[in-house]
Image: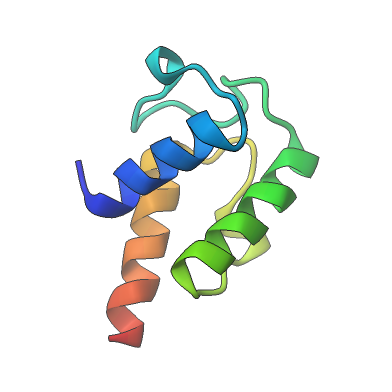
Length: 80
C-alpha cells in the first residue's frame, strides 16, 4: 500500500463514513454504493488534500480505489 492509498482510505472512512473492511484497491466506488455526486465531492476533497487536479474521467463510480490512487501518485510525480 502506498501513502496516497492509505490517505484515501482514511478519508473514505473518516469523512465519508465508509466501512474499512469494504475498502480494497480493486473495489470500485460503485461497489461501495457511491454515486457520481459523491465522486464530485470526493474529488474536491482529494484535490485539496493533495494539491492536484483530478479530471472528471479519472474519478467515476466505476473507478477502483487503487486506480484513483495511481492517478494521484502520477500527478504528484509530475509536479515534483
